[in-house]
Length: 95
Image (cartoon, rainbow, N blue to C red; front, side):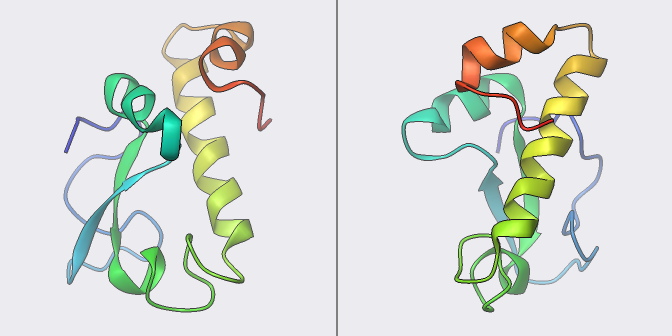
């Protein structure tokens, strides 16, 4: 996994579990490489990633997905980039 700009250590970013960890690209699909290049990645346990209705990639996971996108954007901006630079990369602001 690429180095995350907002997570240290190897535990689920949402629940802090250290079991059944999976790599998560905050921006996926055509933005997956952008996530890798910019550190918009984190570890999620299976339950928080895909293993429950509230998981990021599941039916009721919209709030968790937005939380991760906002967290990645804040970290990017806190590292010296502008909001416009983030929008140029991702296509919109989540803040």
